[in-house]
Image (cartoon, rainbow, N blue to C red; front, side):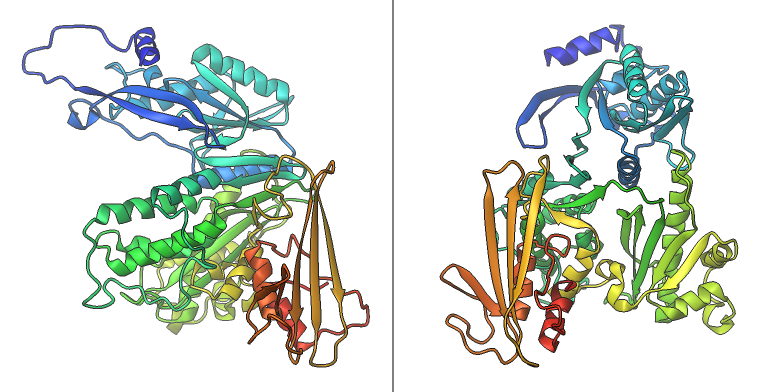
Length: 594
C-alpha cells in the first residue's frame, strides 16, 4: 500500500481542491491480490487504489473508452514465428500503467477512460523510436531497420518483445524504462497465466498452474480421471427432462465455464465440450453442471498438456483443417463449425462454434465452416506481413467434404446455394486469385473432427496426436523440459500365426547426464491368444508388476500414460512380418507401426 501511494504522488495523480457545487465526487477503494509465478510460489503482494468508475456518466465524465489488447491467437503466432527464426523472446512489465495516461482529467485505475489514455501514450512512446502499429492487430508493433526486425506485443501493461537483434531489443527496453517505470523479468516464462518452458528444439506453451488452480478451487483435485471431456453419446439440450432442475447457484456454473473457456487457449481438445456447456450460461441445469464436471475430470488427466513449437529450417506454410457436424444442436438443429490452422507445422489458431443459421444440407454446413476458416487464413496472412514472413505458396485448406469443395471451386449448384449469403462465396474468389488451395482429406485424417463432435476415446486420441499436444509429465519429457532428455524405445515381436499376434512394448527413458532411469512395459496378445494368468475377458490386470492385456487394452494403456505417437514408436523386429488384423487394430487405435 505504501508503494502504491508513493506511485500515486510521484505521478501527480491528484490535487486537493474544493468540491464544486452540484458535483458528486468519484469514490475509490483498495483492491488486493497475491501475485504468483509459474511454479506457484508467491511473487509479491499487490495493492491498488482504484476509482469507482461505475459512478461515471458517459458524455459528462468521459467519451472514448476502447483500448486494444493482444489477441491470444496473436501470442501463439508471435511465438511460432520467433521459434521458427530462432529469435529470443523477452517480456516486460510497466508499473502503474494507468497512472501514465494523459487525460483532461487525471488518470486513475478504475476510471473508464484510463485504459485508452494509457494505450495512446504507450503508442506514442513506441512511435518515437520507429515502431509502427499493425493494421491487423493494433496491439502489435513492428520496427524494421538495417540492423534487424523487432516485434512488440502489448496486453495492457504486459509486453512481449522479440527480434533478431539482441542489442536492439536492449535499446528498446532502455527507452521504455526512461519513459515509464518498468520491470524486466528477462526471458519469456509466464505471460497471462501462460507458462513458457524451453527445451533444446523450441518452446512449450501450457497452462499447468492455471489448470491445477481450477481443479483445486472446484474441489476436484482428487477426482477420478476420465479419458474424454464429453460423452460420445451426449444428449445435452436446454432441458433434458422435467427432473432436470435449474441450478440454485448459477453463478458457480458461469464462473467454472468462464475459467474453462480461458483454458482452451492451450488445450484445444476441450473446445467443443466447453462450447457446448457455454450455450446454457443463462439457465444452467443439473445436466449441464454434470457435463462441466466431466470436463474437470478430463483435466485431471490433461492438466500437463501443452503445445510444442519446434525450430525448423523449412519454408513457412499455412495449412488449415475445416469440419462441420450437420444439425448437431438438439435445441435448434444448427450445425457446428470447427477449424484449426498450422503455421510452420505449429498449431496456432482453432475454433469450435455453433453456426448462426440452420444449414439445409451437410454440404452447406461444411461450406459455411470453410468460410469461417478462410476468414481466419486471410487475417493470418495479413498478420504475417508485419514480421516479414513470406509464404512461398498459397494457404492450403483441407476438408473432408467433396461436395463443399466442389461448391467452393465451381459455384454452379444454383438450387443448392442460391439461398447462401453472398459474403460466404468469397471462398471462390480466393481460389480464382490463386490465394487459396483446396484439397480433400479422408475423414480418418480430419484433424478438426475433435472440434465439432463428441468422439469415442479411440478417435479422440487419434485427433489429439495430430495437434502436436504433449504432456509435461509424459516419459519423453520427464516432467522437466529445461533439460535435454534421451528416449530409448524398443519393440520385440513374439511368434504368431494368421490370427495370433504377440506384441511387447518396452520404453526406457533416460535423463541426460545419467543418474535417472525408469522403464515401463506393456504386453498385448491378439485374437486367439491363449489365456494367461491375470487376463480375463480381455480386461487389464497387473501380474507381478507387469500389465497384460489385449491389443486394444495395450493401446489404451499407452494413451493413459500419455505416450503419444511422437513419444513411442512401435517397431517390429521381424522384417518379414505382415500386419495381421489384430495388429492393424492396434495401429488404428494407437498410432503407426513402423
